[in-house]
Length: 204
View 1 (cartoon, rainbow, N blue to C red):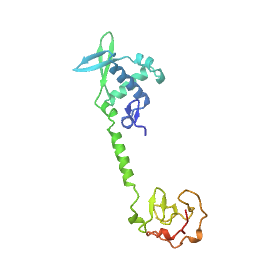
View 2 (cartoon, one colour):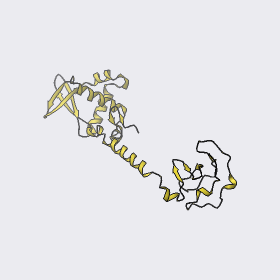
View 3 (cartoon, rainbow, N blue to C red):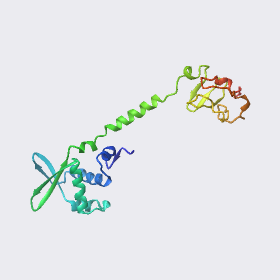
View 4 (cartoon, helix red, strand yellow):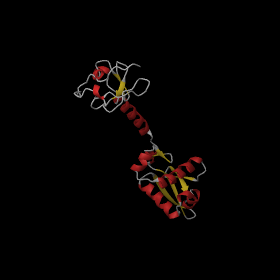
């Protein structure tokens, strides 16, 4: 999931049931408010900002929304306490808005730090066990490959700890060698097989 949309937390937007149009309208309001060019008024001890639905429709033509549709979006955000509205009777009814109590959720990005922390923790927990735990004979593991004491290496199945019998033996320089199916021990078990005995010694 993308962390942000229009500069707001996308997970919070999903929780609050906001779509991209809602966020676009809210972005317009926040940017206009922060520009210092928006008409403001103190109401009930709080600063509210004058909104013209028609002006917004002209400013954000990409939304393809008319006045009534924009009005309904503002009402939706007020119902969800993202915005607060006041109507003032001055030369007709003027509408003013300010951010509401749930707006803070949309600008709370602490979940990103938690996501990164959990991701790093998962990486640490997914590390491969030590040589002594899985390969007591001195062979060691690196990514998807097991290196053997005799300078050969092959693919390993981490879950069963059995060598993938379909894999081709490789020199350390990555060149292919002819497979040796007759040298594979068919009685190998899941309980820490002695991997060095499963492959012939190959010169490098």
